[in-house]
Image (cartoon, rainbow, N blue to C red; front, side):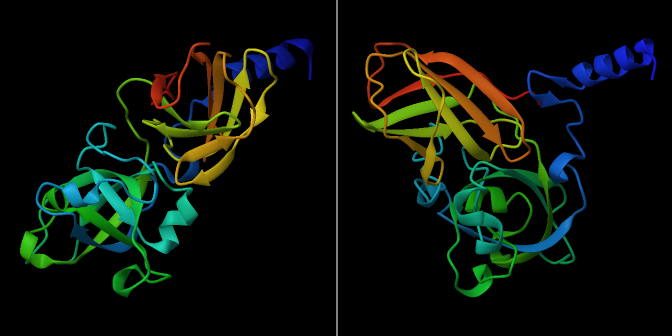
Length: 251
């Protein structure tokens, strides 16, 4: 390959991977891929109040921006919490008595424990009642659906809520766009190097380093390998119980 050819390859590589974001947003890791068969039920009441909290650790789903477009996933889909934050498009199918036209997009915010329809290896979505009623009639109870992974569209940046205490920093990560499901996090104090965090539960990530009095930066990597670095997202005077907003994945 001549020098000109080499330069063209390098240029194309740069254009297709800017700041850690591959440009092929659709076919990668099942985004807008083939539809998969599953079933859906609902829980949480007409106002979805019973869906708050949950195994992903998001707490109040309204204040976190997820609203009622949420689902508890069966074991086969939940992946021990690594699927928290992922987005799925669902359509009700093959049941003309109960199905309604159109589709919904929901975020995984909870776990549907084994028992009945959520037993392995079933692919099952236990939806909030309000969003279930967008694709099926209430009296149906359970309906067949098809689903596929889609990219998450979020308003604003990734949010980092710092809990815990000195030498135990527990950071809840929410409002993640793109793939949505965080698989790796690193933290950096203004006086430290980058350090990997370990996932405690749901989307709560922990560091046992003493980081008080340092501005904090975060590196977030989602299941598709994309990453966002949020430099100095928490100022040196950060405090436990506060939420700080960083960068965001492109759609």
